[in-house]
Image (cartoon, rainbow, N blue to C red):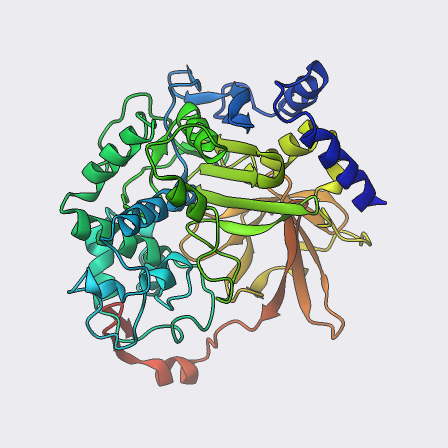
Length: 487
């Protein structure tokens, strides 16, 4: 039944795709934003492009909270990993010119990069996250460094990557999302073009009609109309923006610029060759693991093909969703961690297509069975998520529960009902505590726009004197250049 509703909606929409929004379509989309932004808080810039035309846009909230500066068409927002598609686009353009071979080892162009790694890592491996190159942020975490609290840039990332003696796996054999792949690609673009990456990118964006888009030359540089990114911890906290990478994210752009590019993907004139535009929306090698292409992910939405990417960093959140069969794109840009970019973009799409929000996905927003509220003492402890991330549940002096992850700020867990709590930092993200079938304590994470994640309790590290003594000594790992003293 759900499939029938979806297909009917898509078919009806496709037949009228060249038309501007009807009053009913516009009303449904506008209703999505009712009550979305808190008074005096950060917000959003959202647009819809259909058949090459910008047919809907909405702005709400503040770009700068302290001085009540509203978000508008001129506001530049960091789109985080959504920027990867543009780095891939630059690489494709250089390949079209014959200056880059996508099948060549990337060190053909970056001759001094990662000299200790002997395996061949092609440009395509980097583009598709099948290289096995480790994420620089994960490597820094091993050294006790929280990357966004230090003045890191591509230079410090490259020093860390160049010290690596091995990869996570044989290139091409697995998929593992790693921001380091796109830092290496930005360095490749710089080496091939002979220009500093931010300067080359500036010219590239100007050529394709994105005159208000670009990267900061260094952290702390003030951009005109720049939105600050905000997280919420008992009040709005502006991200310090100390780190400044090129390639994996950190692109500041406006909604009109994003929509102008979407129009080019849908057939409007572009300075890029049609072959580059077309190739950018495909996967270079469908046999490679993962569903990743040229800085983009491939899946389905409402049973139809979808091309998309999500970005998130330090209070900035972004999402681009393309539905190629009906020449439609939804662009979401946020400067707040309190709104989910994926959920918002998909609600806009559902409203546009007149499809019930419930049809968006099959992800549950909470457990099927509600249990009694557990005592705090029954949930405190150390848990491991499916991904391997260690999460600690703690409480403060007032009995408020917190989720703690190494390298991240704690998030208060607010009781909702029964055994379900909600993150104070991400509305809609719920955590339910119970026991697994074997009796192991666990929690599950629920959100309507993402799959359920499970974390099982893990024993705390031993604290007895003998165990501590056995660990004493100085440990050094040359790859992350980390020295840890246990005493």
